[in-house]
Length: 356
Image 1 (cartoon, rainbow, N blue to C red):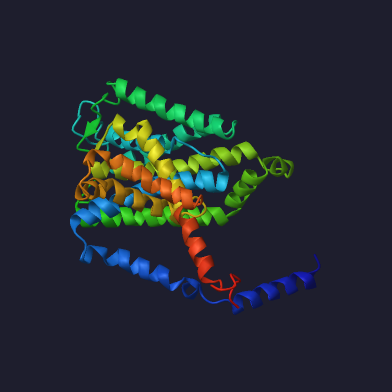
Image 2: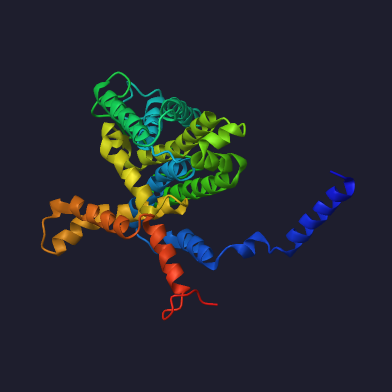
């Protein structure tokens, strides 16, 4: 490239950037309203809402965002995301403190937490290395087999995983004089990591690695011909997803104060898939929308049925019907319904054409 052409490209780039508004002005007003609402939520919400509703929503959203990253940008549907989360939760209980002091090592948090995430990433890398050599239903079956195998192994192993009982009294460390298991501190803790997970997925999807991963999703043969290592990109996607799932698993163990085989059973693994699909796998926010709907149905379905004079034990039927209706009317989940509503609002009600 000639020096004059190089200088002209720089001048053109400067001119484009000069005409752009600052990033703070490009953020839609609705985002600022949501951010302010979440920050001031402890000022008017009860501890139950902060801890059980929003805390649980953020945790499940973080784990579901790991699946959204794999499925949405990588085209790989994994049923092992809850297993990765459970591995991190178990490692925190094993390396850190719990009521089972004969197994727990009692190491400090600054060693326990990174080590737990590292083990989860290594485990996910091995699973990913096996799963990426398949496609479609075979990937789902391999990850489902991994989830089932880990569940039965954890339930039957008493020397390391304490068998069916698992670990109790798994609590976050006391940092800065704050009890992070209290409702308000735990709310802000989960909110922070939910925001971090959201923006990390959003950023990575627009980074060179994320763009290459989307190319691998759309046409792996062409990406391989261009010199990209298809297998390495897919395995790296599994490794990154395990970081998000591991963070969610640690927070989940702290929220409930325990980790057991029930946490990593088949049903929670399927629940994460349902959350991601119902929310929408086209954008990271879909994982948190789906998690919020799931938590609301899981928490209040029994009360709704009883108020209608029905058997409260049928709450799973109500949850399933809610998810079925969403997917029936929008295969893209709640995000798809939102896009349809926006598109309809832009069209003339008489002609059906877009408004000028």
